[in-house]
Image 1 (spheres, helix red, strand yellow):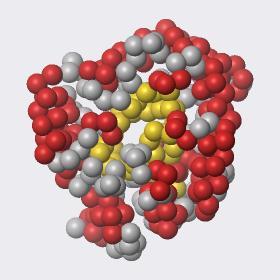
Image 2: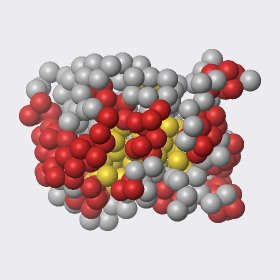
Image 3: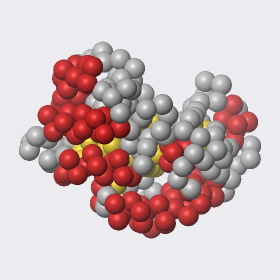
Image 4: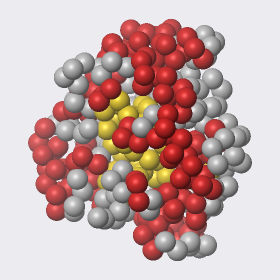
Length: 290
Ligand code: FE
Ligand code: FE
Ligand code: ZN
C-alpha cells in the first residue's frame, strides 16, 4: 500500500476543493487537510456542488482517496469553556454539515482550553458539548487532537482524551489525531514510539487513532510550547519521524504535515520527497527556496 501522506493546503472561496486538490498534487501528496475558511474566524462561504464533483474527478485521476481527506475545525471553537457555549455548538454543527456535504469523514478538533474553570470542569464541558453536537446520524468522525499543553489546553495526555471519549455517547463518531510536535512538547518521548502506541492502545484503543500530524518541534520535550519545525530540523529529528511515518500499525492512517513555510514558500513538496526517499536532506531549506 502506498504511503498516505500530505499536508495542510488552502481552501479558497473561488476554487474550493478543486484548488485544494491541485495544491496537494503539486506536492505529490496522496491526501491533504484544510480549513473550510480562516482558522481564526467563522466566516464560511457556500459550497459549490459542481466544484466538489470536479475535485472528486481530479482526485480519482491522481489516486487521492476521499476517505483519507481531513478537515481541521477552526481553533477559535473552545468547547472546554462555556463562555460562548451557544456560538460554539452552532458553529460546530454547521462545520460538521459542511464537512459532510464535501463527503469528508475526518474532522480534527482541538479539545479546548479550560481558561479558568479547571481541568475537570473543562473536560466535562467538552463532553457535554460533543454530546449536544453528535447524533446517531452524524457522518463525520471528530478527531480530538493531542495538544502540547500550552496555557490551559486540554487533551495534553491520553488520560484526558480517554476521559472525554468515555463520556461521549456516540463513540463511533469520535477519534484521535496525534500530533508529533504536540506529543513531544507535552512530554511524550518519541524515541520509542511503540511504547506510546502501547499506552494509547491500553488507555484508549488503537482503533480510535484516525489521523497523525507529522511535525518536528522547535522546542525540547515537555516544553509545552507548540511551535512546529520542518521535518528533521527540530528536536525530534528525521529518524524518529520516519519510524512513525512508516510504522506497520499506522499504514492506513493519513499523515499530514503542518510544518512552517520557509520565507513564504510551502516546504511540503521537498519534505514529502525527503520522506519518500527516507533520506535526510540537509539542503532542504535551500531546495525549498530554489
Ligand atoms: Fe491542530
Ligand atoms: Fe496539529
Ligand atoms: Zn500545533
